[in-house]
Image (cartoon, rainbow, N blue to C red):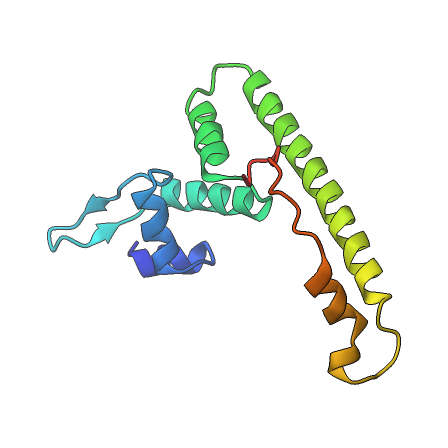
Length: 143
């Protein structure tokens, strides 16, 4: 099948297919005599797998690792379990960070309870007077 057909079957764009090929997540297809890419069912399955991993917010490196493990079907799934456990831990950290962010935004929102002139807006005043926090090291794969 052509690249546009693969993209349609996998519900993504042609650019996404090309990007995953460039990143080494999707193997290069065979070429037709006219030098068009020719994709098969294995490409469809792999692209769907990649897209499902991305939907779970996995990084390309995590996906690359999982694909490598998939390519060794006789080995045990301990590596898969460890990767998923680490990813869950990253999600837990991100959830905690988002909860903290929500709390800070709610506190800021409480500074302005009624319509008033912008120059008296407690939210804007709060944003202007907040101490800039030093950038903290994140413990997730998001960096």
